[in-house]
Amino acid sequence: MLKKQQLYQQLKQDIQLQYWAPAQVLTQQQLAAHYAVSRIVVRDVQQQLMNEGWLDAHGKAGMQVAGFSAAEAEELCLLRLQLEPLALQLAAPALSFSQLGQAEDLLTQLAAHTALPAYQRGELNWQFHRLLYQSCGKPHLLRLLDLLHQQVARYLGYQEQALAYTDTSAGEHQQLVTLLRSGHTAAACHLLTEHISAASALLVQYLKNTKGA
Amino acid sequence: MLKKQQLYQQLKQDIQLQYWAPAQVLTQQQLAAHYAVSRIVVRDVQQQLMNEGWLDAHGKAGMQVAGFSAAEAEELCLLRLQLEPLALQLAAPALSFSQLGQAEDLLTQLAAHTALPAYQRGELNWQFHRLLYQSCGKPHLLRLLDLLHQQVARYLGYQEQALAYTDTSAGEHQQLVTLLRSGHTAAACHLLTEHISAASALLVQYLKNTKGA
DNA sequence: TTGACATAAAATGTATACATTTTAAATTAG
DNA sequence: CTAATTTAAAATGTATACATTTTATGTCAA
Image 1 (tube, rainbow over the protein chains, first blue to last red):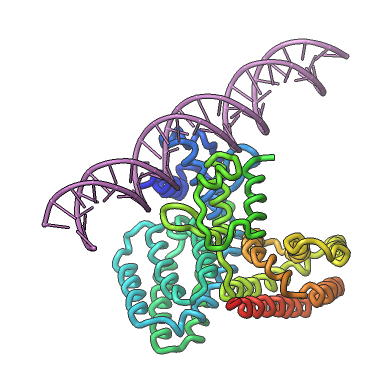
Image 2 (image 1 turned 30 degrees about the horizontal axis):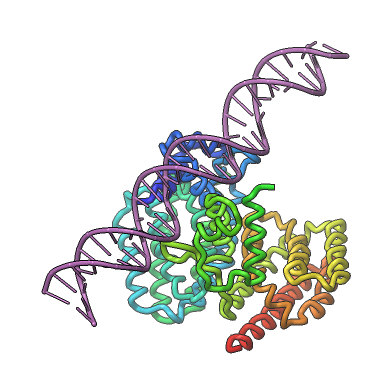
């Protein structure tokens, strides 16, 4: 595998596990030495992770591990609310039964592997959502959604610790598929909005509570 | 100035002027030789322009100059419609008279320099819009809008040739400022939606017409 | 002729070396 | 002691060189 991709995954994981703490400043040389790769590779990964919101620019020298805030989480969810129902609305008429089946398979997986680490559950969860939007026929919209997901994904580590949000969402997910299968597009979009709002509210509430802790 | 930024601007301009034609495949080496820089610089710029939609990935080797399509333009405008009124709604209460003044200055500039090349007029136009959204307090939303603008900007070269759209939009721009100054936020957002819709329709129509030409 | 395989050419990925800029330290003048 | 200037250290930008992968070419056997 390309070293670029290896480092990309490894660094992301290490940030997720807080091996590199939020607000910590990292230099190219530091990371190149630590991960035993050249600075070229580090630079590529740095730019990619900056695009995805995991790293922030830090003046002329170094990059900064992105922090967490309730305000940011709220904003990201606001953007999801603005775009995901639209994507679903556009995709719904084009959704095949095969795709809906795939989506349900993902739900089964999610239900089965309750012991999976947060980021993996988050990934499955996104695969489910992504599958429903896939057929919307708007590549740029999908690209924006992927970008938003990457940014939200940073919070998933937190999410697991405090929120038993997955249980309540499992029912909503299943209901979503049911509505889509029966062609109730508008109702599905409405439910999706509720679903994202609820998850958003829980996450924001949690972040506000632990702010002072 | 950094060579990276020089090449970024130069390459973008050359694509805009169709020195590199849409769908043409460019290699790192080719560009490095042509612009007399190292491949490292080319790689950086390549990644940036791919993010901004000016270049597309092309398998394992090379990058492809992005093409134009009515469908893509329509999608980009749809996304603008979904996000810009929201940004304006959030920013409107926080807009200062000083900012509104700045915005009007930009309109004056636009009115004065009618002979400017399309991409420069487009840039001024965006600065105007951007200023109105600036105070929305949502950095990620602004980032998405900047990204969308970059992608729309590719079409501005076309826009000028065929559309006398700037004249009709000048009035709408001024009216927008007036509404905002008097605190009619909802009306301003509505007008903005109309404004983007109209410009979008003209661009899409033009692209559809010239498709066969 | 065709198709598979070997080989050469070309493109990208990666590392190292050098240049430039930035940052921090240290020294010295006031 | 303070502040400003100089100087050294460190970090990034850039180029060159090397390694790996990909692609195209060409040869040979069936």
